[in-house]
Image (cartoon, rainbow, N blue to C red):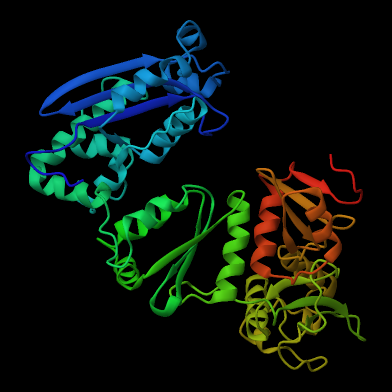
Length: 469
């Protein structure tokens, strides 16, 4: 669909208010829509019973209190009416991912497939007014002199978007404005060797995608929680971004692998990039030559970092490891950086030759506290070194044996920070756990540490028993 001066879809300027920011947990409390069709404006607004608690800070921000919505219909009773109101219109919102995402999730819960064309006015503002430092709604209000009627209420904020549209049209002219909109939401020009049927067959589900060039050589591997949308964004970006244009011209085929969710996609992406080495990815490095610092006490009682090479390295099992580096050079650069930051002695750290009773070079240029010649306590030097290194301590595997991380009915099996595979039933689960086959990968280690400290900390299954909980 391409917009022209004479023939364009109606624009629905939409704003919603919610109980919070999480699509799955929180609910919509108000929807406001201002539709612009052939210079005529129509208005639709409703309060909605979220059937859940409205936090006090949200009540203060929006002015929507429980008593205002308690007798209003819930979303499922209004879903079809809202869907009809938005049908065939371009969905316009500020930070559209939020408003569209909430409505899409709400429609999905009642079995309605919601896929409008979406225009984000944050992106529109960035494109049309690049000189502005910020593009949040308050900045746009101030920059363009918009009239505020009811800030943080759905219809009031929807009206601000309509005003912003009129400002853009007045400043740039309708033709230039439509050209910008086409770049942001128009159907991307598909690469010459990619047909629409292939694009349509890509599911909008979590997973990884592989873009191939001539002779089926991998060009780019990416991940997304919505595969089709992410792949399409490459071709949309080809209108304005040089890298995306180059990719679009070279791509000959597309393949994808679905995963259970975002964690599975992150792990798979890391593995696929290292296995297939696509030419247009920023390379993720293999972990075969990893090294790490280990603290030892030498014969003179000095705590010295000792570099453990990849042949002796067993991350997740060994205590007293710090850093994890891809090379000796990277490890030494890190140690020199913390020496400089904490005014540690490079001679005591083993980074330069140590001569008993003689000051190191760093002391002469006032970058060493003097522990090498007794001007500061050796114990203090040790404490500062341990404090600095502890920020990068390699976590020893905290479980007795392998674990499984639950994600959407799948089980990611992990042991000693090594990914062993993903199971869909008990037989596969214990087969993977018993295999113990898995190479330590630094990128996957970082992914798993973050997951287990956050979203997935309560989604664990410790495999000490063959009975699943």
